[in-house]
Image 1 (cartoon, rainbow, N blue to C red):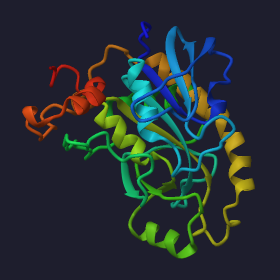
Image 2 (image 1 turned 180 degrees about the vertical axis):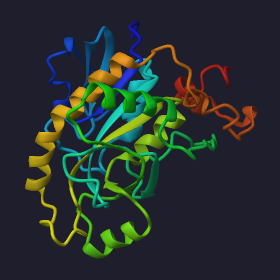
Image 3 (image 1 turned 90 degrees about the vertical axis):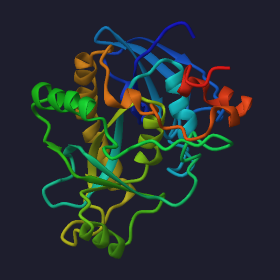
Image 4 (image 1 turned 60 degrees about the vertical axis):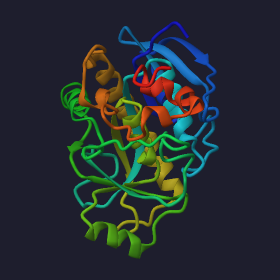
Length: 293
């Protein structure tokens, strides 16, 4: 594809139904890891071309464990995406992080168990170890934080906290919820892992805008989480999420060079002469000219 799109948005299909988004078109993309969750919707937002991807597919047909995370990230990378703004519905594990609030977390804890469509792009004869001490791009997080605080004044925003990701699709037991709180986690969700880690392997700066739909099940004075509760609060949250995304896109410097854009420097352990032609071909988009034939 000749058009280079540097900004990607991953979330629900409703995210791209915003008045500011114009010149919309749909792109079908295939990858070495299969098709992404849905066709990519590309449009112009504040003068910049943006690619939107419905994480769970059109109509929400994929469980968190069924999402093709590798294909999703690879598809965005193939368009030229260098920045990903992810929107994630989540539960709160803190009293002051209330339903309806927005959070830009700073840490991530992976408590998932399945392969989830592939946890890494590496394997099959090529080994890479990528650092994710700070899983969310600090530089991109600062852009989104400024956009949320200065341009969306009617939203309640928090910055910081550890986001624990569970397998799903079931909600937590009360015992699990209490343990996650004891571990010091602030938010609970089902889809940010391995999405954030794959974005790092693809050298894409990634940040999540978590919007709280419930208090999970630890909050005994609140009603236990249900799908109806989640959907009702999500519908109220979506306008604020759209506003923050639009404001963030307007502030992103598409030429900015962040630490995440160099995540693969010195990350590959496999000797160049031991990397198969097939492995080089599959990961050429990620590795660039590092291992050119």
